[in-house]
Image (tube, rainbow, N blue to C red; front, side, top):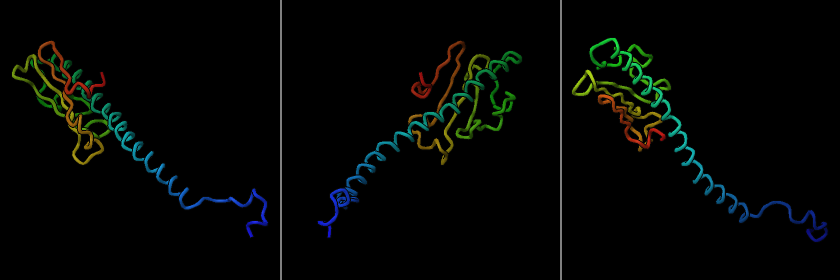
Length: 145
């Protein structure tokens, strides 16, 4: 029967082998693309922590302008972060003072356990520390510099 049809109509469709090869190519591409996309989204969510830490740093500096030392708790800073959660709710926030509360403080963001950032192994905890006039950002890779 196939011999009576014109050549245009004889080779319609895919063979099982062609279909399996196409599926293998799609699986390989997905295997590369999905982890890369997840890594990208985790890096982009870090901005939630960085924004909160920069705002808390500014709040600590304002607080110190009116008091003899830096605030030891978030509630004293009167920011939207008094509840201890970042704006997009990916990080838990905390602040405290160093050995010299008049010149040292830190603000820290920790990825919420079981949250979207829990898989971000490189930046589970991001910290901004100020000792006298020196600011340190740890881990450096998380600050996007």
